Structures are given as structure tokens and as C-alpha cells.
Length: 479
Image (cartoon, rainbow, N blue to C red; front, side, top):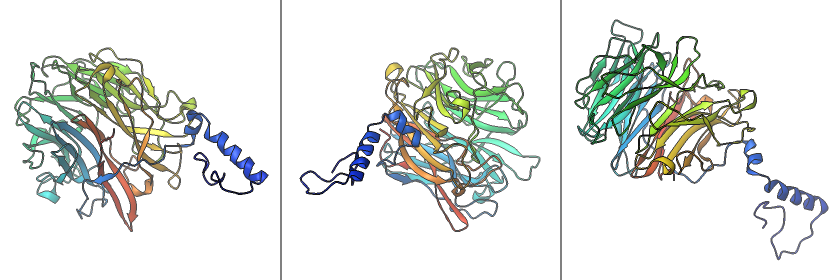
């Protein structure tokens, strides 16, 4: 049978009569099959691949202020053969947090997983706060400890409204009680990273970035003892305002924090920027601009935003990816865009990642970038997971949410064809927030032993009045 147009032309050697109408249809099909890839890509995302999904956890809580069963907002970190992910569980109904933070850990490079929930954070697991959110995991190689930072929030607000805490583990499976980083600045959107290069003068320093939730003042705090104690909140030079930072450490000990900054936190515009520390967190520079006021196409009823995703290679080059519509006529939908820097000061011009043709209807958002820490420069390996709508400016009844990924073997100069991991998903399968349907403010991917794994929220059809959104990964690496 003709491989391009099955079912139209008969198999070779088969006796049959071909009508003029059938012949015309076959010729049209063959012509369409030979169209250029850019023409075909205007029709939507690629078809599903053979990747098998592994469900890592399930929301088993029953607290009345939660939207069950929901899990979202994944963070990942890998060291050696161990890969750990953290995520929010039981997204709140009417408030911005979950009932608890979950974790899943693989000690054999993604082959098998152990999962559970953290204790001592919220009232559902022996803590005193109403909700928790924005969990991020990292590893401190100098002290041999895994660290998850997260926010604790009370609703309605009380005198002890918000606290930024960390929990520690020696194996990524058994976790201790929360340790307070800050409870004085009304923290929001934190991110943690540690200096894991033995030759660095600041080996074993860990850094947490956050901002004040009301006015956006940026803060940093440093730990030198594996997260047991934390220094006082410090501001970058000029006390800038911002949101959505990610904390990265170069092999020489320089800390680079890509972040959205603004002079008016309520109204913007926001610039994609980066600030640094070269003295182990004793001081922080003023931000430099990566991209001024990146244009963004708002995605219908989806909590997407334009926060960046970032990673660093073995030489210390930093890669930042964000959603951006500058390459689309009329800013009609978002591409994912990348910029890189060797020193955190000078950044390349934003370059479009060619997931779909610029004439396509696909809207891309919420990147999760992984950079292989054993590669660098022109041979750096990158993997980028992302969500997308098949059609921008859709509606609750027509929006089709997909999850896909692309990869690069040359530091982001060229990219593979996109592959679909899940979808289409109806957005009515997702929990609601004041800013739209939600899979989290970010998602993540990491390389473990040179192989990439993404961890992400996938929504399944509703089970009656209950949702079914959980954290998944792939059984095989994204190679």
C-alpha cells in the first residue's frame, strides 16, 4: 500500500479498477504529503510519540479547602544517580497554595521511584499553616544533603502570615522538620541553588532568592552549613523589584540569578534581567538586562506567565528560556526564546527555538529547561519541556493543552523536531486559580547520568466532581 496515502491506492500486484475520482484524490494526497515541513507545522503539534508515562504520586488528601485530586508545579534536581522532584499537592480552592508538598525520588537514574509527602508544614500533616507552595529542590554536595525550600501561608491572613522554610534529607526520601529561612519580609516565589563545585572558593554555600509579595523587593539569603542556618535577607544593589528568579551557580562560585525586574511592580513593564554575586553571597550586584520588556501573548484561562527557566553547563554558561511573541505577526502567539551568557553580564540576542513555524496557530508557554552539567559550549546538551495550546485564543470548550519537548546537542544552536508527551487535555480538567487554570508557576527537567527526564503535571478526565491531575515522568529518558 502507498505509505504516504494508505487506503487510497491499492497494493502492488492487486487487480483493481481505479476510478478517475480515486486517482485524483491519490494525486492530491501525494502532493500534500510532499509539502514542506514548515507548511505542515501550521496545523498544530506533532502526533503523540511512543514515550511511556510513569505516574509518580496521587493526591490522597481530603481537606475541604482543596481541589482534589490535584498535583502541580514540579521542581527537579539530580546528583550522581539520584533524581529528586518536589511538587504541590491539593491545590487550594480560593487561596494560592496546596495542602502539602510531595516528593518523588529515584536513586537509580529514573528506573524506579519512591514518593511521599512532607510532614510538619501544614495542618494536614502535623504543621500549623494553612497551605504551602513554590517548592524547589536542590542538593548540597559539600554537606551531603538534599534541600527543599517552600512557602508556608495562612489563610485568612494572620500575624504569622507567611514563612519561607527548608526541609533537609540525607537520602532524598526521609525528610526532617522545617527550618525557617525568613518570616519577616512576606516572601513569595522563592528559588534555591547550591555551589557544588569542589574547587569553588564557596563550595557548600546555598542561596535562596525570593521577593516581597506586595511590593516585589528582591531578597537573597545564604547558608554555609547545609541549610541548618541562614543569613539575614540581603538586597541586590539598588534594591530592585522583581519576580520569578532562578538561582544558578557557576563553577568559579559566581551566582547568577535570571529574574523579571520592574520599576513598577504592579503595572510593569518587566524586563528579563540577571544579577550576580562574586563573593559567596556577601553582596549582590544591580541587575543587567537580558531582554527589555519581552512581548507576551496572554494565554486564555491559563496560569502561564512569562517567567524564565534557566540552567548552566559545566563551563558555567547560563541558558535562559522564556515565552515570547516577538517573532509572530501581531504577537498572535508565543514561541519559546533563548539567550545565553558566559559571565552573567553579557547576553546573546534572543533567539527563537523553532518548535513550530511562525505561521502556525500553536501557542507555547511554561518552559522547563534541563542542561546537562557534564557538557558545555558547542556540545552542551539541552532538553526543553513545554506546554502549548494547539490554537491560540481558544475557549474553555476548544482549548487543547499539550505537553511536548525538544532537545539540542549543540548548546541551543539547532534543535530536534518537537515530540508530544501528553495531550490534548481539556483545560476544564485543571484546577482553577484567580490567574487561570493551573499546572503550576513552573515545571522542570534534569539530566541524570547524561540522560534527561522531565517531571510535569498531566490532567486526566474529571472523575465526576473530582479532578485527576498528577505528577508524571517518562519511563525512558527524553533522548
